[in-house]
Length: 278
Image 1 (cartoon, rainbow, N blue to C red):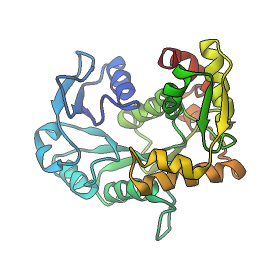
Image 2: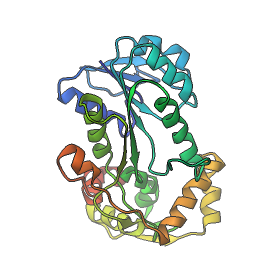
Image 3: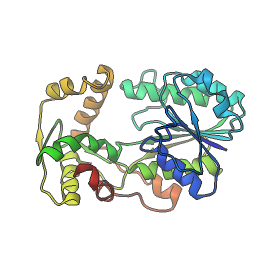
Image 4: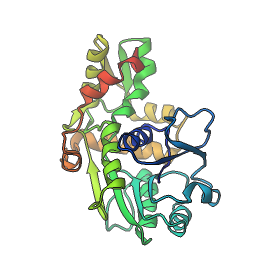
C-alpha cells in the first residue's frame, strides 16, 4: 500500500494517478474526502499532516509514503511512520534547500529542510525531491489575464526553470515503487530556463492572445502578497525572484535520467492548462 499525502494537490493528484496506472494500491490522504476528486480505485481517508497523532489508521499497512512538507510536525510524522512499519518515504521538498549549512537561505527552505532532516534521522529508505519553480505558479496570473492583456508582476526578467507537476510526480512514483533511489536528493527542473515574461507569452500563445508583463516594484508586490501568505514566505519568494534575474537556475537532467523521457516544456504545460486562463 502507498499513502499519498496532499492527494488533491497539483503534484499529489498525479502521484495517485501514476501509481494506479501501474497497478499499485493507493491510500489517498485528504482533509475533506467528501469534496475530494480522487479516482475511485484509490482508498480515500481523512487526515491532516498538522495532526500526526491522528494518522495511525491512515499509516496502517502502508509500505511507502509520498509526503508533502506541510503541517508543521515533521518529527512527529516521521517517527509515527517508522513505528507503523513504513519502509520508504519520498519527500516533496524544494530546490532552495542547501546541504551542510547551519542556516537555510530563507523561510521556505527552512520548512522543507526540517522535513528532510526528520526523515533522514529515521531508519526508513528516503528520497528527497527538490523541484525548481512549479509551472503551476503562473496560475497566480490567471485573474489578470482573464481581465485583460497586461499582467502586473515583479521581476519579469527573473529566469527560472519551471517544471511541470506531472514530471515531479513521475519521479515520485519511481522512487516509491522501485529500488535504487534511497538517499537521492533529486533536483528537478524543466528543460530550459525561461523568464517570467516569456512564460506569460507562451500562455498567450496557448490561448490565442498577445499578453505582456508590466513590472511593478517589489514593495507593491509585497503588500499584495502579504494578504494571503506569511511575511517570511513572501520575503523568501521575492528574494528568490530577485536573485533569478542575475543568477538564473540551470536545468538538470534528473527527470530524463529517472523516468527515461525528457521533461515537459513550459509550452506543453501552458497548452494543457489553457482553459485555466480563458
